[in-house]
Amino acid sequence: EPEVTQTPSHQVTQMGQEVILRCVPISNHLYFYWYRQILGQKVEFLVSFYNNEISEKSEIFDDQFSVERPDGSNFTLKIRSTKLEDSAMYFCASSESMSDEQFFGPGTRLTVL
Amino acid sequence: QKEVEQNSGPLSVPEGAIASLNCTYSDRGSQSFFWYRQYSGKSPELIMSIYSNGDKEDGRFTAQLNKASQYVSLLIRDSQPSDSATYLCADSGAGSYQLTFGKGTKLSVIP
Image (cartoon, rainbow over all chains, first blue to last red):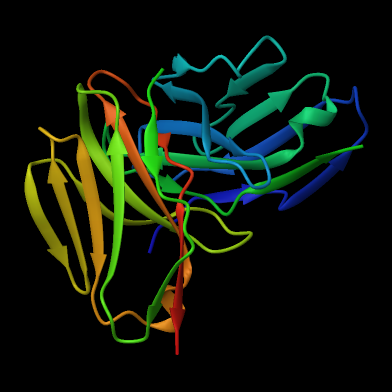
């Protein structure tokens, strides 16, 4: 069964460093998303991406964040200068169409020291 | 600010019983509703989607939607210890890409 994959599973970085989180969405899906979940809190939307551009973003997704689809399969989230409060699980998701079921990857646990 | 509200639990039910999970949402424009299961330290796993008023059944799971009351529920029949997890309710508004999640209800199925 097709699934969303994410790498790495765990990333440890120093405050102020740049990180890139990677995702491979389900192959026939056209819509891609990033969510985050701080420990003990709810899942929060960051950004959606369709047709090679951002379609919607939340207030969390500020200038420190960027997304890219560098090739036909990968979808990345970059955090330019990490802060302690960026420590969270980051989930990539994909869907066939807008408002359709979104399928989540296993997540990347980001720890900022 | 869109909100999805869930009772955080924990909700404890004996094995074999029916577990009933509830959710309310604030956005009257919401059109799509989803239930996800999340085991500790894992990612959300889609259980069911529901788009129309009424019931939708899939195996041991039944989702119910009442748009007039802005209420969504999930029934789990013949609950198993493996159903012990946090259940997340989420909605998606008209013209919106994002899912808005509730905090989740922790379910514990006691053998």
